[in-house]
Structure formats: C-alpha cells, structure tokens
Amino acid sequence: DQQVKQNSPSLSVQEGRISILNCDYTNSMFDYFLWYKKYPAEGPTFLISISSIKDKNEDGRFTVFLNKSAKHLSLHIVPSQPGDSAVYFCAASETGNQFYFGTGTSLTVIP
Amino acid sequence: DAGVIQSPRHEVTEMGQEVTLRCKPISGHDYLFWYRQTMMRGLELLIYFNNNVPIDDSGMPEDRFSAKMPNASFSTLKIQPSEPRDSAVYFCASSQQGLRYIYGYTFGSGTRLTVV
Image 1: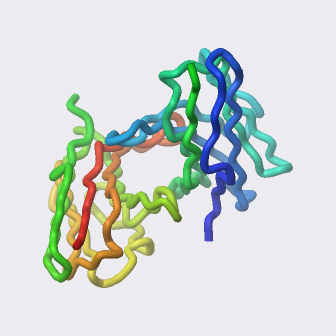
Image 2 (image 1 turned 180 degrees about the vertical axis):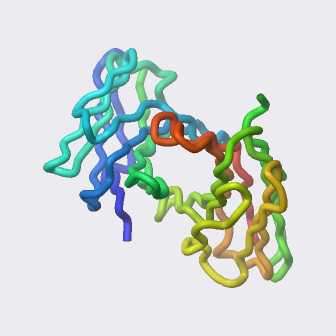
C-alpha cells in the first residue's frame, strides 16, 4: 500500500502564477519529508526538505508546508516559470528508515 | 564528483534473458538504493545497502531479482529470467549517513529496461 500519495497526476499553471503540489501520507511516525524534481530522461534531483519540528521551509521560489495533524504537505512555487515544468515527487521517512516516495505530479507551466 | 553513474542507459532484451544493471555510487556515500519507477507505483524501493551490506530487500518483487554490492564503488541489479512486466526505469541512488534526511538521495540517470 502506498504510504505516500500524490493524488493529482498532473497540474497546469500559467507562468508567473503560483503552483501548489500536494502530498498526503499515512504513517504518523514519518518525521522527514523531501520534494524531488525530475526532468525526462534524468534522475530525480533533490529540491527541498522539511522535518517534523517545522511547519514551513522556504528556499527561494520554493516553499514546503507541513500539516502534521492532517498528514499533509504541499510545495508552493511562486512565481512559476516554464523551466519548472517537470515531475515532482514527495517522499517521507521515519528516522533510521527508508524514504517512501509518492507517484509524482507532472507540472506544466504555460508561457 | 561525477555523481551516481548507471549503465546501460537503455536496455532492450527478449523475455527469458538475463539482464544486469550497474551502478557506481558517489565516493564516500555509505548508502546505496535501487528503485524502480512505474506509472502505477511511482518510485518503488527494491533494495538498499549500508556499507555494502544489504539491509532491506523486502521490495524485491521475486526471486528473479537479485542485487549485489561487492565493494563500496559498485553494485549490480540482476533479473533472471526477465519478463515483459519488468519493463520500467530502474534508478540507483546513494547517500551519506547523517545528511540523507536533509539533502535526500542523489539519483543516477536511470536505466530504461524494455523486455519484449
């Protein structure tokens, strides 16, 4: 069973607007969360992380929000750029264990 | 550093044949992971090693799959015999203890396997 779920397989956003990618998890013991970005024919690359002691982490145009009570995290990209078009994976882990990945959301930023 | 290096990039083989995928992790990384990407299950962990020792192989789908890490700089994933349902992109990733929760894993470019 998927412990990490990304229920939106795809998302289209106009350039300059905000992109919001969502991720839900089932294991309340997860305490580290990552977002990866993947371009075609390349491996996923690390984007941003957050630990469960925080509810927000920001890095430039990228912000990750964590809602532990809802077991939900989201990635906000503001402003969205065409180069952000990629597949985004969220991942979650309990300390000492492996990361579980979601199925990915394909983001298309329309110029 | 050249990053995580996987070979081959593409592999097309006939059903029943043996397939070997190769991975060279980043020097100094003590964890190595093999993942399979499919549309239905996303990135699925097959097996991972710590200091060349297999730690968790519960994700290996069947006995047809095996993985080895004979030394810190090389790992193989073997499928014998291969079947069409094994067609997927296989990723190798490595990480360093203590940093993996902050910076995650470094992935290779993957091997696209097609079994006909």
